[in-house]
Amino acid sequence: MVKPLLRDDAFEAVAADIMADSANADLTARGWTPLFTGSRTSRVVIMSQAPGRIAQESGIPFDDASGRRLTRWLGVDHAQLIDPRHFAIVPMDFYYPGKAPSGDLPPRRGIAEKWHPRILELITDARLTVLVGSYAQRHVLGSERRATLTETVHDWSAYAPAVVPIVHPSPLNTGWLMRNPWFESELVPDLQARVTAALAAPAPTRQAH
Image 1: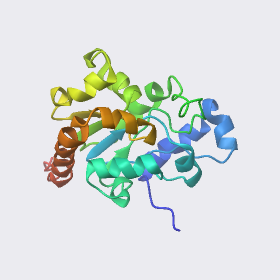
Image 2 (image 1 turned 135 degrees about the horizontal axis):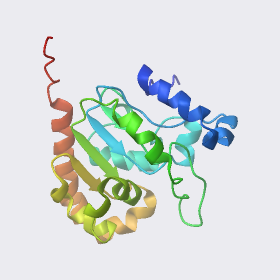
Image 3 (image 1 turned 135 degrees about the vertical axis):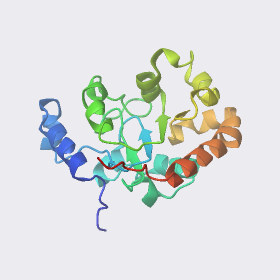
């Protein structure tokens, strides 16, 4: 299988600098590459947690069960999700962090603070940001989040129109979804409508100088 193009040239330059960062030396030595996607034309930013093991090994974001659930929630297919012309996937850590007793380890501290500003300034026409899980919500919303993830996600409309906080699509959260049926009956249709609108929005008119 031919690996899809995940980034434009400006994003590739950032990826090269991430790989050269001493904080990532061991990961680069393993042959791992930072997993994020995007281009200047990306309309939807998916700010997620960190790549899972399967995605890290394949080099393709959300190439796993979490990705299958996420695409269903967004109302797109996987090819659309990883197409940088439309979506930017910007996780809190660009590498698989390792296994924890329950799920994966958290993203490393300081990675998002160091690299997100440089990446996000390249995206000049984003219309929607989807905050996947508590780490992304804490990073972006700060004091605007509610006391718990459930409360933050349940109050998603308060962050409209530019931001939608969601629970992580991991299979480990199936129980949470069963306890909170409003997520798929109410939030998901609204999320899909917002994604559709963001992708369909016309490109900004460039004024001549």
